[in-house]
Length: 141
Image (tube, rainbow, N blue to C red; front, side, top):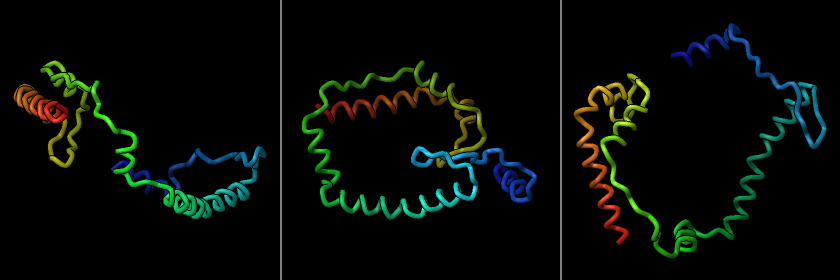
């Protein structure tokens, strides 16, 4: 809602913008003229897409697929990875670090509800995380 009001105030000139660009360094030369700065920025942004796409076309000819890159750089298993199991203290600390908000995500559960229900959900969360870590650790063996 605040963003909407900021847009309304900005469009009706009630909100001043103090972030004007005063100068711009171009090739070790400082430009102060606002029209020249605007023209240089417009020219840059008009031409950057073409130069990036041209560069990407040239790179694609030499580029390997993502799967080839995985095999190239990760050709042996990760031997040093170990998954410590989680504890009630760790889950409690994570839940406490969440900000109190009424807004929710895709699951439609707010952090405020999670904090209120913490005593009831901590042990099922520990169990779920432990099962996931056990499955991952058996996959690497």
